[in-house]
Length: 262
Image (tube, rainbow, N blue to C red):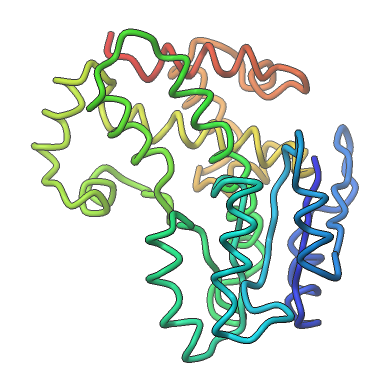
């Protein structure tokens, strides 16, 4: 797994280094690569790049030109896999709305919401978002409404931690959300949230989180027993098998089965 970073502030670079897991038993340390120009980032992120990118949209440019550079990045990489990260300033606040419209939901503000755990979860969510189109595309026989709703649910940031929060994020009542999902042939909201959590667990392991206890903590579970039981009851398979290196197809098949209404 590669993590590319284009960040001008030394504090931001230090925060990214601090967030990345250290060497652990059964894992490979992921060392972020700090780049020095937009051109270098565009070159490295092209082709078959499958990692995450964390970038300051104002890096090396005037604030009025920042969206132009982000547009260039989007043309190469799409919006999946990208975390926007900048120091707090008036322009950053004003630009967030425009960036959200462009389809960049994951953004962090230096010194505000860039705690190491949140930064790592953000990178994992960026990795997961690159897998969402493949996952949704593998669900055959669903209507247009189902694909659109599922894509919106799976791509939303910050992650909803409960069904009420998910409904509020989507500007729906809980009752109406359940009805829409049922009508579309999709699973209940709770199962969809757990499926998304499993997708993030896979990304976290690829980013170097080897301990099940650490995975549980990052994803909001009480402990190893809780996360194993949750994903076991959801998929009928062992967590270690689902997160095994090279097990992408197995995970996708399991999640596709979970996302369909029984």
